[in-house]
Length: 323
Image (cartoon, rainbow, N blue to C red):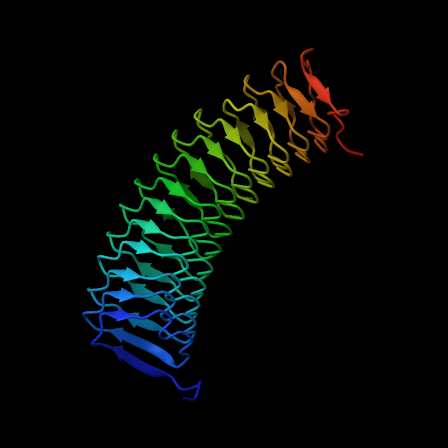
């Protein structure tokens, strides 16, 4: 068949659409799946790049991994009630997908489920969802505000990486960790609410969130990993909870940072922790803290006075502030 010919397809008389059954069917433009079909297996419509619409029956219970991967012309889809999982990579690379309706039966959004859905503007997270997988919304660059349902207990690594239109986020109480790169490069993120259930913030979790001005860190947090707030250029104030260490590059290039309150529990400030925080003017140093060389490099306006005798400088002059 001529690859430039577009056809409408109706699928009926089966209970399951097999693994990769219609993979790479470039001619498909509109597909209707009739009642009775219960399963769409792995990769069933993968690389149907000109598929614009697909109508799913109420009998669908399972949609397999990568079922619609790189269906680049698909603009919207309604999933029927009864589907419990958006499996890994189901809508990966559906770059024109603008909206999707998830049923209340969904409890898991898998790894890479909507990765590179660059046109996705909004999505409802059903109340019973408990897991949002790794890279689930990776580079969903049109995604605006999103409400994460209260029953979510796990948000994966890079889940909202480079969602640069995301502006406000509320993390529910059941989540205990903000993982590596979760909100990295969310350049328009202005506010995020972190609950008291959070105990750790991963590496680069908020790196390059250049619109983030203020963030309240609950006392439940005991560790913040390296580069967690790297290049948050509009962040102005930070009051750190009872952590023991500020790791390498945690606040590097936070050029808008003017005030930092350090906890008495702090034991060490690692190399380049406040690198090029050029507007940082004052900081309190707790007793017995160990400070690595260049921890405050480039902090041209910083004036540290009354350094406690118990403060230990490791490896050189911590107060080197540039050339």
